[in-house]
Structures are given as structure tokens and as C-alpha cells.
Length: 374
Ligand SMILES: Cc1cc2nc3c(=O)[nH]c(=O)nc-3n(C[C@H](O)[C@H](O)[C@H](O)COP(=O)(O)OP(=O)(O)OC[C@H]3O[C@@H](n4cnc5c(N)ncnc54)[C@H](O)[C@@H]3O)c2cc1C
Image (cartoon, rainbow, N blue to C red; front, side, top):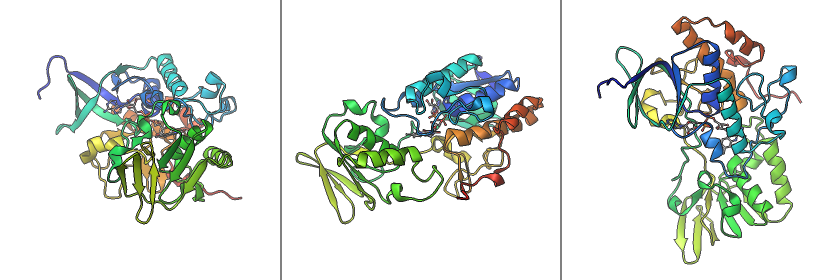
């Protein structure tokens, strides 16, 4: 498609106005960048506002920013969801409101209702983005489209009989008194905790029993908050957990559903709940990355190793064993991306000093590990 009169042109386009997109947007704004925009298919914080009503952030919020330790869930300096909501574990809707408040305060240039369908690198440099009704040109792209809106809906045969946790708006509205949950990581235990709290009986089937994983990194093992909740609901007697159930198929049977692993079968009257995770939105633009290691390879500036000018922010950022899938992790890379862009656009990077002082400019990954001395 050729460029028309109505084409828009920018220095930077951020795709997605979630935690990553809003956080990156604030840094670009503080750098004084004028020609940038954030394109969002729904509204600011759309993934969070779509969480089941009863779901809360597992990472705690605490008003520690006054003493130089930013609230774990803040996406920018001098803000704290704990202060805004006076809660330690805030809900998805509250977090979406926090992001909208940050966006309003910094007057971020956001266009909502814009779904980015394709990203095409141009031979002369820069990119052409296709949305439903127009083409947008930009020198740099920051892909911050997250994972939540890309649920893994077909992990095994018969998965169409199940309901994925991303499709549930409220556990309270789910019909039934006993459920099978497939997947026992954060989403699965959250679903179980909410259903058991409502008096339901729940069976959690997991391939390798995430609850028993002794790893200290919450990107691969359950968080302390979740372990604590698990212990509590287990004591009710309404929870059954099976840690070696690699589910291969779900079948519809008279009066309900049968769930099969290689050697076992479980039955339930209600559609099993899939808590089998999410794909990365990078799959939408997969050819622009090298996937040879099983994840999108990025440079030390979080730029695609295959496509210069295409940056990634959010939970899909990975460097070897370092997985940046929590806000408190990936927010430390916003300034790294901004710094790379500032250098190429010849912008003064001084505003980024404040980020470095606050521990929000993590450009030396050799310091990261989850080791604990005692
Ligand atoms: C169930 C669950 C619970 C989690 N709990 C926590 C937690 O407690 N603490 C924590 O730190 N992390 C948690 N995470 C990790 C989570 O990935 C991040 O916290 C956060 O949601 C990621 O922010 P994001 O901005 O990258 O993605 P999102 O919040 O998903 O934002 C992406 C945005 O991009 C938009 N979008 C997507 N595709 C397009 C497109 N093609 N065009 C335009 N717009 C698009 C979406 O509408 C959305 O608004 C959780 C993740 C899941 C799945």
C-alpha cells in the first residue's frame, strides 16, 4: 500500500498502553521527544481491566518511594499504587486506573482503539505499521503489546471444551460447585484460591507441580503470596492438587467432561479451566526476530538482533536465564531503550540520570541473579 495524505509519521511508535507502554512513554516524554505516539487497540491498561474481578497483583505494593525504593508495581518515579489505593495487592481494575492516571499526568500522546496489525521494516530504514484504517510510518518501534491478550487456547486435544482463565471476567459468575483447573502456576492457583474461597471444590492438575519448585525466581516458581494462599486453601479440605498430571486430552462425555493424562482420567460436570498460560504478542511479528534459542533474541538495548530499530518492552524481554516478566523487572529496561533511541536521535540523555539514581536504568545484567545468601 502506498502512503496517502492521511499517513502519520513519527520518530517512535509504542505499540500497547499497558504497564510497559505507559512506562516507556513517560521516559520518552521526559527526554523531550515530541514526535512519538502510543497506539492501543482498546484503552489504557486494557489487559489489567480484563482480569477476573477477584484477581489481584501478586507483587505487593508499598509506599517505599519516599526512601528511594520504588513501589514494586510503579512504572515511573514518584508514583505508588499503594498510596493511590491503600492496598498491598491491588486489583486489575485499580492498576488500569493507576496507569490511566500516570498517562493523564504526563499527558502522554495515546491513540486508543488502534490495533496494529503488521510491522514492516522499510529498505531505507524505519517501519511501516498497518492498522485497520491507515498506514503509519516511524523510525523506531517499541513493541509493548504484552501477553495477556494472547492466551494459549489450544495446548492439547479437546482444549475447545475448556475455558481459559483469560476468558473469565469474574469467578463468582461461573456456574458450578466443583471444578478442574489445568495448570498450577500463578493463574491456576489464583483461580483455585478464588473458587475455594467461594465454597467450591477444586482439583488442580499440573504437569510438574509448580508449587514444589524450590527456585527462588518468581518468574519460574510460585511467589510467596501465592504459596501462602495455597497453604490456606489447602487446609479447607476443598482443594486437591496433583503434581504429575501432564494432560493430553479433554473429551466431552455424557453429563460433563473427561480429562486425560497418559495413565489417569478425571471427570467433571463443568468445563475444565485452562490455566496453561499465554503466548508472547511477539508471535504477531515473529519473522522480525531470531527465535533460535526458543525466545526472541535481543541486543543489550532490547532491540531485535534481526531488525534494527525494533525494541521490545515488557514480559517477553529475556536475556539468557534472566526473564523480565514482572513489572519490577522490565521497568528497569525502559531507560535502556530510551537511552539507545536518544543517542540515535541526538537527544540529550541527562533526564535519564534520575532513572539511574533510582535503580531504574539496568544496563549491566551481570548484577542480576536470584541467589540468596541465607
Ligand atoms: C495472569 C497474570 C498475572 C500477572 N500478575 C502480575 C503481577 O502481579 N505483578 C507483575 O509484576 N506482573 C504480573 N504479570 C506479568 C504481566 O505480564 C505484567 O505485569 C504486565 O501485564 C505486562 O505489561 P505489558 O504492558 O507488557 O502488557 P499488557 O498489560 O498486556 O499491555 C499490552 C497492551 O497492548 C495492547 N495491545 C496488544 N496487542 C496490540 C496490538 N496489536 N495493537 C495495539 N495494541 C495492542 C493491549 O490492549 C494492552 O493494553 C501477570 C501476568 C499474567 C498473565
